[in-house]
Image (cartoon, rainbow, N blue to C red; front, side, top):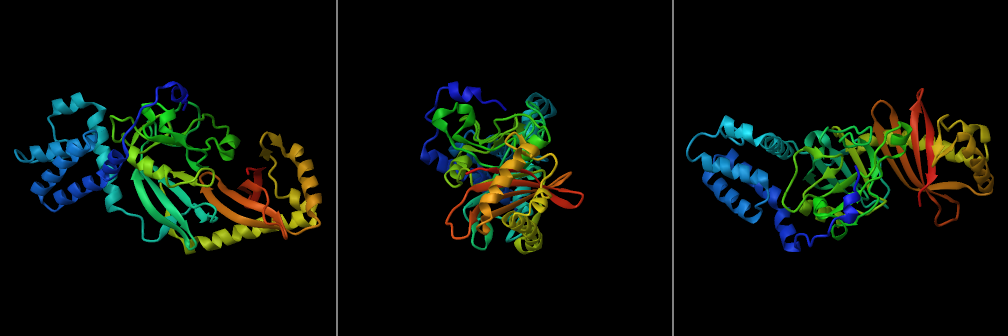
Length: 391
């Protein structure tokens, strides 16, 4: 997605802090209305819905629920947006979009992640990453985790919109949201953007190294807000970006850190216990340390065996990379190399991939270069297809 208009659009003052705080409670309040309806307390539900639309008039779904509650005083409401066929036809996609948004929000209420469970991609997250994000496109839900000494803990979750054509981005302009393991790379202030992006934007590093290996194109994938006239967008309504409400983005952008916050975007998240991931993480760590130990020993034949034939590092192929690696190994032979701040993020689709981030330092050193590697399983063996210093 291109964002040229972001640099040229006039900046808006945007919502005030008080307005953002009011809007931040909007979904919770709407869910409260749903719960009252579910328990047959229609009068209370109507009162709550009426106050909600007064406080947040641009929340279209709340307006629709309020309209249904008013209509229920005259006739039986059979479905969300229970209007005449003529009115439904004239509403076009809007009514259908609102019904789908309502369904996704209700599913998020009824089908919560299991207690203390985490996404299966979070094998190990270093403490330097204070937060992690996971998106379940099938649920239109974005989950924010706080990284604690005992592992990631679900902090909060938000309704999120994805591409008009769904997910699995492949080419520029396909209106799909990419799937994979990414990192938040920046924070764009709303004052530098047009109103279309709402209260700001968090760019992510699409295309990542796996995307490039698969010849995927496109750029400018952001996690951003909504125009001031719109509280939320339909579940599939963007040109490929991830979009959440302005108050949600305001809270998210004041929580997560750039460069160190991973964001997994999956067609459907698999929730597991942290303990169940320990054998997988441990098994891969063993392979990673085999690579590191071979590098320390100067075992050139063994080290070369860890790299995939299609290896690439910022434009350098394997034959161009190996001399640099050989020189690095020569410098390291006099000191035992160690790994610090290890993060392991798994991605499995048609291939098994591991996104690995760590600091590499010699014994006695307090710091070292921050590296990232991408490993892929080829013929049941893990191979490195990207390696580079990122910090």
